[in-house]
Image (cartoon, rainbow, N blue to C red):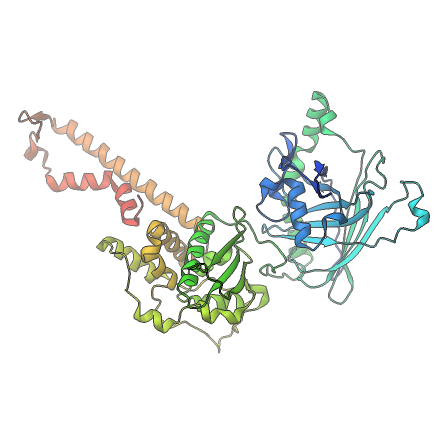
Length: 556
């Protein structure tokens, strides 16, 4: 609605799934057996692992919903079941900007809603809304069950980056129709309107999603009806992201709207999906954190939120001896985005990494949150002490392996500048890091006995990240592509040399014959072919070039 008027609309496919308990336990709590991990048909389905907090897919939808509500201080007796309205996986593909959870109590009253918002960066925010519900009166207790809440309204602050044309400030308001105003309602209907207001409380954007036809039950569709449905709707999910790009193009080039760079998510949101490198680096970071805890003179118990779906939370604690009770310092470390792991390896000192990624940085750049930063001096080593321990306890390595590690040290560079830099950018004020980049504290841990199992993988992964930061604008995928084409080129050179050798054999009529019973080989007419041992050595290097290249990298 401002600063420029713009509007669009298109059809969209939503499906509703009941999230209900299986039975009631002896204590009166409703439970689920966890078998609702996947719901729907093979061609139109939803998976529990795709919703709410990442991971915990084995709990199923009902178990994950209960776990989330408990984390939001909602008691089990306050609700009974839910209805999830979402964009399903159509032939295993889904692009789901927002999902609506309608949460009901045992009297079938709509008590709460969850708006699960996903942006195009793979980040997620769950907004738990209480709504406004008038108290039940004795008259309403004895009235018809159809007299229930038909509208759900709520207002909440905006703290999640969705569109590059809006900042993270402002607020939302929701007006949603109850899909089931009564248990016997025959045809549920969706009608939700979200209004976004600016920080000055001006209505800026209005988005509405509503039912345009009668609901269909895929389980009751026949073969022909299913084929017609698939033919009419298969393309909708695939077109969601292109539609977003189309409207963004119009807003940027035609409406000239200001672009807000993406900030890092707050602790209330869920970061993006980790890359394979970040997933593996998390295990190394956890072992390194355990190393720091065990060598600390102060006992610690760290609750580590990893931002990794398969292992969302880990406990790192001081090993207790002789069963004695000691006063332990409790520390929560929440990784806000998996990007922390790929940024952490760039820093030479852990102190510096925690300062720049958490303590002394803009909130929009923060990739890490620590509950009690004042406890860090008892956990992190003193850099001066590390200088005296620089080469103690290191695993003995071959000269070639040491060259690989020296290359890593030579390539080490600062991580990418955050979206909202903290240092001024001007011609008269330029900040350059003039320090020599040594082995980092994490490098020393991996080079020691504790990192023997994954030292090779760590060195290759970190070297690739440094190469990407220096030469390919921070995209490791480009390094992988260049590496693939280099190996392909080496194989091509090897094959060309083999063809050249075969042509020479045919031209000069070379023949191999056995010179003794042991099977040693003698090359006939060697002088006539005008080749020698150096030529055969060069041929071997060309043919085995791809393998030699892998050996230089340290690949098995």
